[in-house]
Amino acid sequence: MTFLYTRTNTWSSAPQPTEETIKYWKHISQKKNWRIVQLPNGFLQTEYKSIDSDDWIDVTRRETIAGAEQAIDASIEHYVNKLEFTKGPKVVKTFE
Image (cartoon, one colour):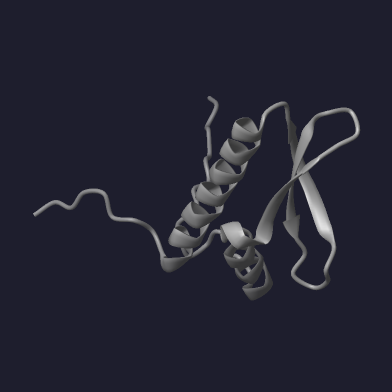
C-alpha cells in the first residue's frame, strides 16, 4: 500500500517579503524611476534607477519605443500587484 503525503502552505507559513524587498518593489513600481535609452545597435533598452546610487540597471531590450514603454508598464503593474499582496491574501469569495 502506498500513501501520498502532501504539504500545503497557508499565508502565514509562506515566506514573507522583507522590508528591504518591499522598499525595492515600491521604488520600481514608480514610472519616474525608469528610462529608455537607445543602444549603438539601434535597440532600445529599459532601465530603472538604483535605490542606493545614481546607477541605472538595465532590464529589457526592445525594437520600438512603444514596445519599451509597454515593457516598463508591464513591470510596474507586476510590482504593484506584488505590493498589493503584502497587505494579506485577497478574499475573492465568502460563504455563509
